[in-house]
Length: 179
Image (cartoon, rainbow, N blue to C red; front, side, top):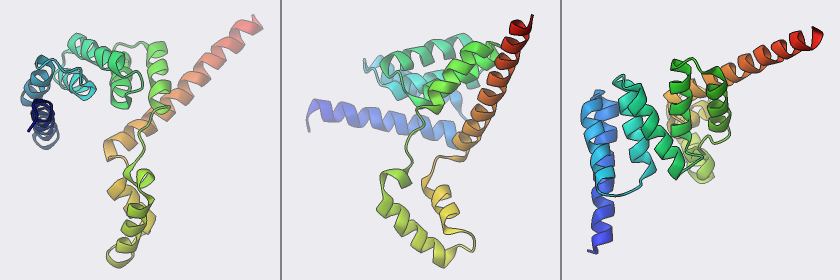
């Protein structure tokens, strides 16, 4: 096996360990170590920087979270999760205008779902749903192949935030023009 392949496999194993620790156990310290190991190996892997930022955010280290998220965005300007994280950090810092900018960018870069990437798989899942699921087969497809629940909740919040921010700034503009 080539060295590049071994490095890539090692990175993927670390990423898997980090994501598993983070999602299954909520062990952000352990996940942080795995993400940092990927970065120390010299790879500018966007998900590793996002992971460091996310774990730091969950551990309450806002400055470190922001630094890591900005590095991820520097590597990949349209990385949905990093934009999402920066929006959350900006909200916590009560920087509504900056939050709005990150929300707009994140909403413009929502990743395609498995169902969108593979219509055949979505169709197969619908067929399975007809036999095992009493509800709407499309709901089952969305649940099984769509964005995860946390992303759907965040997107819903982001859309509301965007609407409220635009209404608030529009009202300010109307009051300023009237004076």
